[in-house]
Amino acid sequence: MSVTLTLTDSVKPLIARGFKVQREIIWFVARRAHGTSISEPVIEAARSADVVLLGPVSRNDSPARDTGGLNPSGTLRRVLHLCANVGSAFTWPGIDASADSAIDLVIVHENLERSYRDRNMHEGSGEFMPALGVALAMHRIPAGALTRIARAAFDSAAFGSKKRVAAIHQASVLRISDGLSLECVRRVAAEFPGIAYMEVLVDAAAAHLVRDPGKFDVVATANVFGDIPLDLAFELAGDLGLAGPFKVDPVPAAQVQHRSAPDIAGQDRANPVSMAFSLKMVLRRLGETGAADRIKDLVPLCRRSPETRTADLGGKLGTSGFTKARMEYLMEAA
Image (cartoon, rainbow, N blue to C red; front, side, top):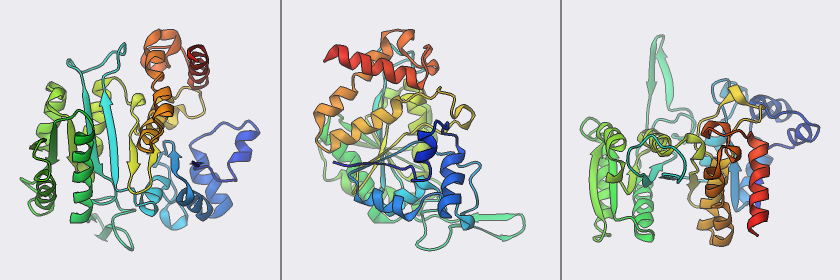
């Protein structure tokens, strides 16, 4: 099994010489060296790998696309056909959660279509300005992609202990596009008579997640509605820094879910748990259950005491300190 880290060759020497990894690296160093923020050799390496790990990338200060400022996340999703984003949110023992009741749910959302300008059109952008002060964004909703998402959601329910699948939508307003979404999910639902199926408007779903998260087992939704309930569930369960979803189909790939935090870049303050849990989910999908179970040792380490947690969880450790503590924990448990 090969694992590709999406750092260009121009970045690795900087890290080896002790340079701190700032948000500038992925956008500007790579672009200066290769003319693009994600070069073709990196893309080819990703294509040949079994697993691709991509850390958080800030988009706010990215260069223009026509000057080489490609979004590494969107590019990899497109070239690897990673149509599904799968996230598992659950309440961590020993970690304070915002939700009053326990959370244990899976959210599957479409990853390539809808209104994302860098990946939803065969050629060109789905976002344009026909006149000054007027901006338009087009999105596409292909039945094939939606059916794959629905199937991934029901397969997830059938494989585990989940007994309900909810489709989050806005068909009351987007009657054609979200109407097609629901048609696709309903067809797949008919193939799983043992799994309960319900449809929930996106605004109502957000309210239910806050008031009664136990209402949901598995959620299926299109791209535009996916990240919002997913991030909400992660935060209600404890912290976005504990989120670890992955993008998949057909090549498993892990990408941390929590948003980038350029204000703490290079300060040894980031929580590495989300990356580790993304890898755990992918390893389990690949059949490497032993390795995945070892990563689960992060749970008791995080709950042990403030001395073994990162600062965002009320602890005293930074990124490197937490990693060292985890290694020591694993050695003790061996």
